[in-house]
Each structure stands twice: as structure tokens, then as C-alpha cells.
Image (tube, rainbow, N blue to C red; front, top):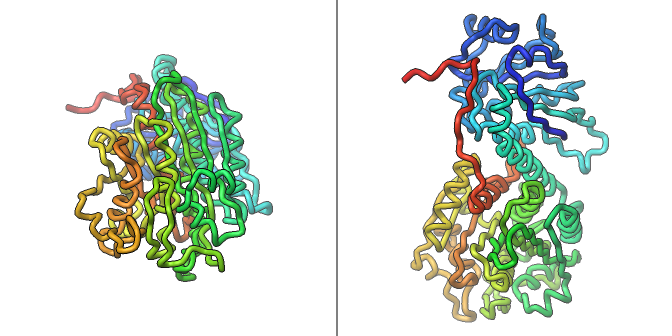
Length: 500
């Protein structure tokens, strides 16, 4: 989809030819004499429309308006979160028959962060999965113009607009690979998707197979993959935007492309959703897609241990002891706690890059879903500055997380009589004990763990990948580089100043 940023006031927007015009209306709207302003004023006065986020009014072939369809969408106070909600509420309009060109126009002042949120929300609202649905109706929307009041506002919003476009692309890629069925998203296919990203500027990719992984000594990762006929892949992505001497941020994404639980077999109900168990890997792909567009002056490494976790005569068994790349031995008490096994080898591998920060992203525990639901991802960090930066990035990105504890007392349950550590510690505080397991393999590097088991996908009628936490991670990386713009309102003649 093509995005364009354009200077359009309400009078100009009325003459803009398009199939759909989405008009973002804030509280305190000041009506002018142009046709669109008059329509908004009448709708507000009649209480057929409210300027609250999520409230919409669809109109058709308005007199003196060039757009075939018009949707009034309330944005409340015009914050990024409110604008995002408003645009997503227009999803059905964007997907309407014959809608090929759309304009999303701010009817008043446009905050800088709201501009980025609007673009990203358009990407979210217009996403359609088609990879294995060849009979599905083709989605027609090809071009979206984001309109702000004047040339000065356009100039002020350029960086935010670019960020929104890159995030829309990155989140879309993450959703796409999370949504693909397991037989269309094998470790090999996931590696091919990563290799395709090497076509982007400053991105390189290297893929290791079973022989290379065995030579490295990744015994825990190899043990998980033993039960599947699909060969494992260890994916290494590099984005080189900074100086060679700059220490990179290393992202590690869990890439279990299907998780049946291994010998500790999961219940059949909703097992199909275990195709989403590579949500962490998908988010790393999405981050690199965004980095390739934004090209920030920073170095980033992405590591993805990808395999399936299936029951087989060769599969890992409860009571087995495996040796990790770090050299620690691990007693397997539950083969369904496999994510931490593939991650621990990847975390140990990350040490060779001497990272400035190490962040792993994983659909790791059902316990985190119980604790936080689908609203916030779980955040664990051994470094206060890193933890605070990721939390702040999540708030700014509308992709929130919540800080969870890492007290040493939580590691007591991981003690084993037959190995250096057990891979599970019982049901109590399961998300925390999983994080404590991973912490054993990171050393003194500033490290954070994002448990996205509750946020990487949705169940029910809206089943599908969310693309989280791509936005959080990209915001963190850009903030680290120092290029995320602060939210400042742009001037507009069409909005009264807020009452003091």
C-alpha cells in the first residue's frame, strides 16, 4: 500500500477526489464555512455524531464533496491513542467494495505522535490475510493520503509519518508470518523470509542448519528439535546503521513454528493456536523490516532459533538431561517448557556480539496470560535503565508492557538433583521462574525478557497475530538513537484553543 502525506485543510479536502474520506474530528471542533465543516457542525448539533474515540458516522455522496464516501470519526482530545482507536474503528469502511483510494484528514490540529499513530492504525485496519486463502476477495485499497492542515504541519510531521509507515510495514510482516499455518511457516520458510530482508539497505542475514548448530554445541536447542522431521534453522540478522565499533542491541525471538508440547503433549482444544508460538521470531522480522526503511544510526542483531516441538520416538523426554551452549546442564521435567531451552542457547550465542543490550521476545508462559491478560506484555529486566526505557517505549508506542519481579528467591524451584538447573519450577509464579531460568544464561549484560504470550495473538472471532511488540521495540531502538520526535501540536485555523 502506498502512503502519502499532504497539506489539506477542510476546504481542500472537500475537493479531493477519492473513494473514501475519513475525517478525524476532535472535541471543540470549530466549524468554518466550507461544506465539510458545515456537515460536521450539523451532525454534532443533531447529536447524530459525537467526537468521542470509536464513534463514527458514515455518509454517501455529500453535495459539494468530491469523495464518494465520507466517514466522520471522533478522536476525543486528539491523543495518539485516541486517533489510533478512531482509525481502527473505520476498518469496515476501508475494506468497502470499490475503495481503492482513501484520504484520512485531520479536521483540526494534528499532534506529531498522532500522525504516526494514524498511519500505523491504517495499516492495522486494512490488513487482510490471504496467503492460504486464494479464493478470498482481493483487497482493493492501494493508496492512502494522510492530510494535515498546511505545509508547515506537513514539514513538522515528516519524521513521524515515516515512522508510522515503517511500523505499519513491520507490524504487517510480523502479523503475516504469525498467521501462517505451521506447514506454511516451517523453520526453513521462516529462514527464507529472513533472507529476503537482506534486500533492504544495511541488512544482512546468515542461516545455520543442524550440522552448524551441533558443531556450536547448542544441545538444548537441538534437543527440542529432535521430535520433528522439519530441520531446525538458526537465523542471524544484522542491521549495520552505526559505526562498526558501536555495540549492537541484540534481539532474540523465540521461533517455535508449532508447539504440540512434545512428549508432554498439550490438550487438543485450541492447539491450532500453537502456530503462533513463533510470535517472538515474527516480531524480530518485523523490527528488521522497519529498520530497513528508517535506517537509523544504530547497530542491531536479530537471532531466531527456529524449530518445531513435536512428539516422536526421538523426541526429548521428561527426565532427560541436556547440555546447553553455555555449558550448563538442564534437567527436563516438562517438554512443553521448550521455549526457554531454545532461547537459552541463543542468549549464550549472543555474547559473541558483546551487546550494549540483550532483549529476548517470547510467547513463553501461560502464567503471564493469567497475570496480565492480553493488554500488557510481561517485562523482566536485570538492568533498571533498560527496564525503564522499554516500559517508556511501550507507553509511547501504544504497545504497553508491565514490569515483573526478578527476585533471586524465585529461582529456588529450579534447583535439580540431577543437573545444574531444571527447566520448570512448578505452577506458582510460572512467568517469573521462566525468566529466572533465562537469566542464568545472560551473564552481566543488560538484559530484558518480554513475555508476549498474552499479546502476540488474539483468540475467538478476531483470531490472528497482532504484530506486538514490534512497535515497542522500534520505539526503543529509535529512542536509543535519539530520533523519536516529541509530541507537539501543530497549528491549525480549524480548531479553537483548548479552554484553560
